Length: 139
Image 1 (spheres, rainbow, N blue to C red):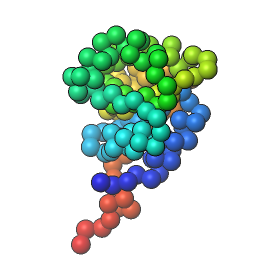
Image 2 (cartoon, helix red, strand yellow):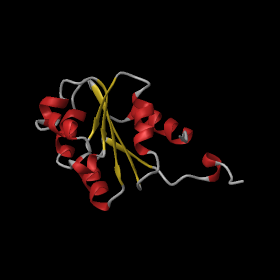
Image 3 (cartoon, rainbow, N blue to C red):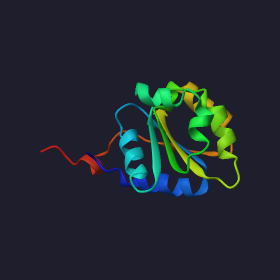
Image 4 (cartoon, rainbow, N blue to C red):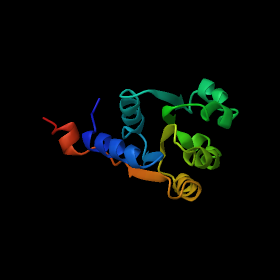
């Protein structure tokens, strides 16, 4: 596993300032691993939206999420874009009981959905492919 220290620090900092942080990028660049590392550092709730059980828990999303405190991770959020409007409501609660960390593909529709529904509430972190410093040189 490759630790992406730059992105870890960036996400940690953004979570201090924004109620929602969205980690976007192409497949297989470590978005889920990054979210798992951040979630492991604090009280958190992790929803993998490729898991049918997690999707079932979110059948009534407001009921499932509104009482949660700490970090709430929604991994692969592009699978349930209808969550964005409800996340706006939860992000606006005072005092904010939870912070939300979203991961997903960098598809134009997802970026547009996040940007429109969560304007002013979300920080976007674009994760790029791995570089030589992260993976080392081939021998």
